[in-house]
Length: 564
Image (cartoon, rainbow, N blue to C red; front, top):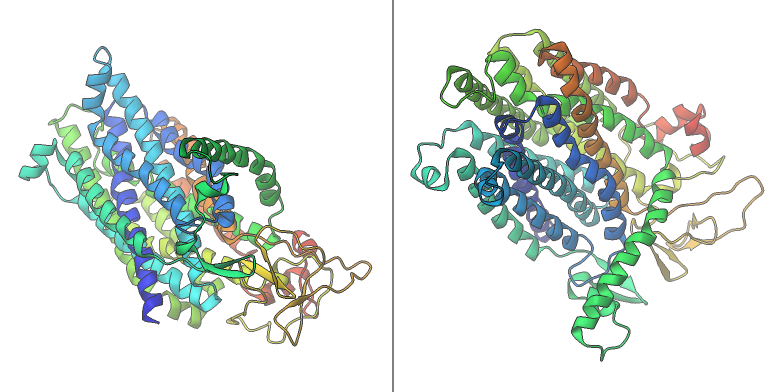
């Protein structure tokens, strides 16, 4: 038990460090871009590039992570690779003006904007994409419904703690500290501090033990696997090392290209329960991100009447900087609220049910953003910003808990049969299902098939054996059971989070310029919250919800019924 708790804390140490960097690092992106002379509409578009890259590459990362077999496990190689991008972004962003003067002295302002945009995109993409293998690693180690809910509650707690620290750092005035003066100002000092924190948290992944997998009837621990990724691509052990490296690179590129059709097919055939959850999560995150991404601009320009590209030292610039610091306080209080909610989340779910907790979170977000749209009081807006921490906590926990529920009972939630006996006690809103098959493979008479392999028939669970029997199909009752990897489905859900940043980034900047008011950010967030409330009514939270959607309580649900 102590070992599992230790593993959970080790994984979430990086989660906390990652969120510190994402909170404090991305907090300065809008002010830095605006101070460099970039227009508002282009600034919002830059914020959307990282999520667009995530939409393209995160599902591919999930697909390869599910099937990766290497010395360091399935998840950690991808985590480490993405962490390199985070560190590069942290180094370039605070030094963009100095690098621009060195690289392009004729037009340093243009080069500064370019470097800021590239480093911001790299930081956002790498940071957001890194959460997907982290979430999959947690679900690997804690696969059951109750286990996963507790594990993701800790995950949400650590994200909230990281956000608290990340938003607290910019709220403090470090400009008078000797170290800050030596490094080049407040931003440079904060980014240097973020690098130190992130490297310390990254070291915790070295001590993580990933789960076992079976190969050729032999159980092997991933950390101790004798075959490295390089050896798998070397056809002959006597080949020189450089040639092995070239073969590995060519083979990796070939695999990436060949995986695109399969990835497209898997993403297009998403089970209806995941599709409904995706849509609800998309609108929920769009509403929340419309608030969070542009809250600094809303406070600095809207409430404090500052000008971001004014000359440093003028009253307009000082008012804007003060508004930015106050926005950091509001987001810090949001994370404090999220910390408290993470601690109480499990009790609330037991008392109220998953549906009530989820719907109440988007209702609160709609009310908070509506108040912020009309209020001119800094205190009231800050209180409403703190209240959105409840929504932030819920969106960090419940979607992934529901996904673990779906994967633990695939025969029910992913089945496409037209009739199937119902389970006793399905009407209980707080039912905890047990996995019919292990989430990463299926046993068939002693053999083990890896994820992504289509089975030759409709597998059903035998009542007397853990093995899966293959009965003959009855006419009109095809029951295919697609084997979906957990990390790929995590990537699909995370795509909702990424897409929620793309759409506001593309349109909100133009809307603000046309309306001549930054209050349009909060009005858009309120409208999207109402859409999220409507979409959440279709989410499947329990087996009984499936029966309600299909209009029958005597037979199990089907994908056909869910689509109707």
